[in-house]
Image 1 (tube, helix red, strand yellow):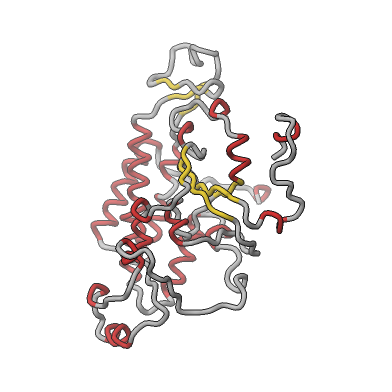
Image 2: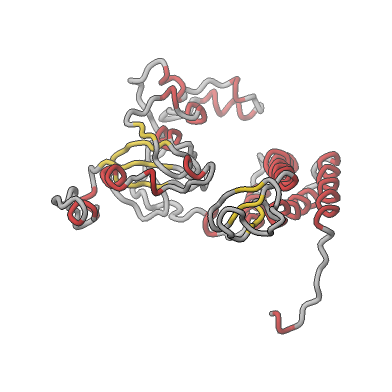
Length: 310
């Protein structure tokens, strides 16, 4: 809030000296790659590297606490210091990661529907446990869920287990401490191997089919239709100028998509497919993708390194 006394010549607005002074202040939550902020209020602090708030607040920010990061900024700070003229002028960047729109009222009809499927009971009935013994489908067991609040918003949320200390659980997500995507995925699979209720082959198939292959194909398609971008003024060219540099400002031209971006999930997908014996058609799809990528970029060759490299 330094703009108040130094730029506007006004007294400090919040006059905060300790973190406890922030309790009760209004904030704006904003998730990456979005432009709609959600207004909330600080009620306390924790030692976790994360954000504790109502599940509907997470859903309003389009984040479901599975490792995705979000930002929280003071409402007064955001309103005073926001200036559209300071936002990047490139396409897309103007409408992401900046609170262009604010929601002061959290409307259940406008949040991610994932939040509706949350159980809101204090205990589970015997029928639930009996259904697990016969491997019943989830739809066969009726448990009160948050979706019922759409009709009755005065309904009470319950929870099954008390806690003495909000800091008693995991303080840092493994998604953040593990550095590479390969580390993250194989740590997940190591956990799945210990859970009897998990079908490892199906989990491996879902990871590859629903995430990695789509990413690989999308990046490969993008590479085939890529443009050239000026590193100085960000102007884009569908074809590289014969001049070899930007015709507007003379800046250097760079590719908008790279080989590394196309290939980043290919090896890990093949490793998972071979280790967990996913369906043959999925393996063949990966091998075909590898052949296409190798035909474009050339096959990866392992270089002999000297001891000095280590």
